[in-house]
Amino acid sequence: MTETPQTPQPTTAAAPAAPAKPAHKPIKPVAGPARVRNRHLGLVVSFAVITLLPILLSAFYLWGRAADQYASTLGFTVRSEEVATPADMLSGLGGGLAGGGSASRETDILYEFIRSQEMVRQVDAALDLKTIYARHHDSDPLLGFDPEGATIEDLTSYWQRMVRISYDSGTGLMELLVLAFDPADATRIAEEIFEQGSTLINQLSQIARDDATRYAQEDLLIAVDRLKYVREALTTFRLQNQIVDLTADIQGQMGLLNTLQAQQAAALIEFDLISETASASDPRVAQARRRLEVIEARIAEERRKFGSGGGSADPEGVEYAETVAEFERLTVDREYAENAYALALSAFDVARGEANRQSFYLAPYITPTLAEKSQYPQRWLILSLVALFSFLIWAITSLIYYALRDRK
Figure 1 (cartoon, rainbow, N blue to C red):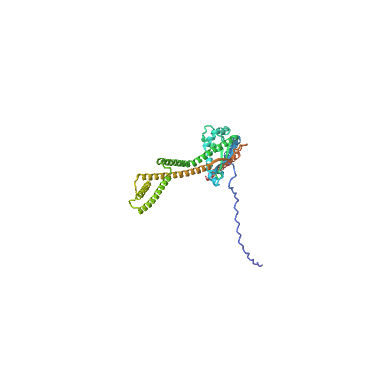
Figure 2 (spheres, rainbow, N blue to C red; figure 1 turned 135 degrees about the vertical axis):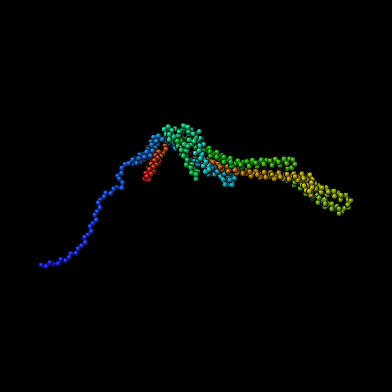
């Protein structure tokens, strides 16, 4: 029996074995379970001490110990009354009292004065501020005033807490909020502030008027004294020289000289006519010559009174010329003194008119009010600020602690 040949079967390569899977390992958590630690307890305790405790203490004090405060409101401004001068009224530029304008410089002074120690001293002398502010000191030691050993500086510091000023420099309006533990006391303090402020403004107004007129008045007095001196000197000169009006005297002398010169001309004509028709031995020629000589001598005498005559040193002529010169000097001095007096008087009138324009007064637009209920201290506002700042302090302190802890 024959064996059939077997066809060889193709051999195939064995498939590679799959890699073995690694064994499962558990993954550890990033952080362990939260547990309360000491630092957490410290954070809670610090929150209670730094935040909650001040809030509770503040609330207890504000509603249990703090005394009610009453407010009185006062508003005013400084006005300047502009008074028209007589020159303005004559020219039609003024009409009596003009509208007053605000005086910002005086308002600035008043603002500082209300906050000053001098204002506190004056109001304390009038109302006894220490007694008013120390009324509830035993029950309210934080917001009340301690009178024991208190100085004027302590009272001024407390005054600046109880008197709040709102000032608008643009409009010149000033508003005061005066606090006290009794509504009547608050009103009285506000009224006294207004009274003292009015006194200060009146003093400033008086000083302004005095400064505006003092120098002009001094110049006027100097001009008056100068005018009196010159007039007295001129009167003495007239009495000594027996001359009332030198101008009229000179005009008289010149009139006499002109008359003599006319007579001289007539005598010359007469002498020439006689000389032509008569002999030299004629008595009329001698008489005409004698008349001409007398006229010429008189003319020369009158001219010497004016210092003329070609450098003549005649004492009478020199004295008369000096008299004229002295009189003219005194006349010029008098005219100058009169003009200076007129200018000084005009300047004084103008200065006095300007001083009247600088008349300041205190004009209230809110009279001191009388409170019906207490609005201060602002308890909720104070408690909110305490809570806010306490929380901020606790939060900042905690952040600083954890920042330092993380750096270790």
